[in-house]
Amino acid sequence: MNTDDELGDLRQLWRAASPAGADVTALRCAVDAQTRHQVQVTFIAVAINVAVLGWGLWRVLAGRVEQGWNSFVATLIYSAVAWTLVLWLTRGLRAPRDESTAAYLDVAIRRSRAHVLAAPLGVGVYIVGLAIGIVMRMAQSGQELGDVLRLPQIIVTGAIVLPIYAAIMGVTALVHHRRLRRLRALQRSLLGG
Amino acid sequence: MDRHTRETQFHALLTANLPALRRLAASYAGRMAEQEDLVQDIALALWQALPRFRGESSSRTFLFRIAHNRCLSYLSRRRINDSLDELELDPADPMASPEQTLDNQQASQRLLQAVHRLPLNHRQVVVLALEDLDYQEIAAVLGISENNVGVRLNRARAQLRIALGEDP
Image 1 (cartoon, each protein chain N blue to C red):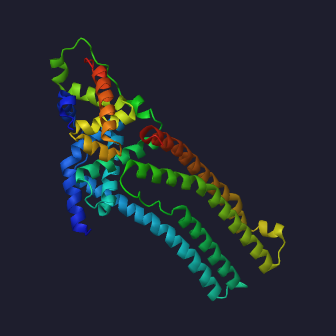
Image 2: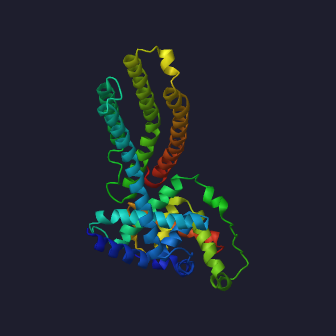
Image 3: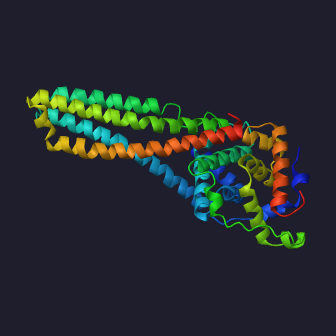
């Protein structure tokens, strides 16, 4: 069925509205810039991880840390667990299964849910990592807990970085929690879901 | 899909439909900058989705599906009525003759604003109908039945006529 007869002159009026904006070439450049940005963000995340592991390995090989292999293996396991969590949270979220509204809303809802879940998990993983670091430090140096907690690197990672990280994750979770509510409302109103 | 084919399809689809995409963006976003961002989002989503395009639907249906989904994403990032508040809505003048109403750019703007004020499920259908998609194509874009398209379009049309100060 055609919609011509039902909308009549409104169609002409609609076509006359031509909001200005970027042309196709400019849009293509913007797409390139955004794609590059996405690749850079992924690269930076992987590069930081590799750099941390590489630095740890170098310290062990250079004999700069007592029982260095224990620390390195612990860091490796910790990193593997963290990346497994990231991959588990983002599984199947790269793209909708097709271009339908239902598939799109479904993947958008699961993405927001993953962001909400990532906050407590991320902070939890960080705290576990910090605790492992403190315990290993105590075991390696024979220092008491109180002495280890006064070390500059523990103060920075525990008393400064942790609250900032937790606050950022909290705000992100809140934003996505709100987004989740809106997406579910859209799903109900458009698909009756 | 090789890069050259992707590039060619991207350019062809956008060149043919860019004014329609701008109008679509304007029916969702109130501010010019947001409309621009939305069109850019649509372009990026199209670029990323093109390798998945297998030709099961027409390329125009494919493009509008992507565009509508990006518009939903835009809505989910903001409070539902935000963009409405930003529009300077100009109420229709019931004393104006149809000739006066139809004859200038203001009338187009008023139509755009009237479309913007429609409930989302009516807005989606009417925008696609105004862009000349038939019932089958609209149903394919939105994932609803053709009957549903007809029902929504009838209601949307009546609401539009009232908003524009015409007899429904």
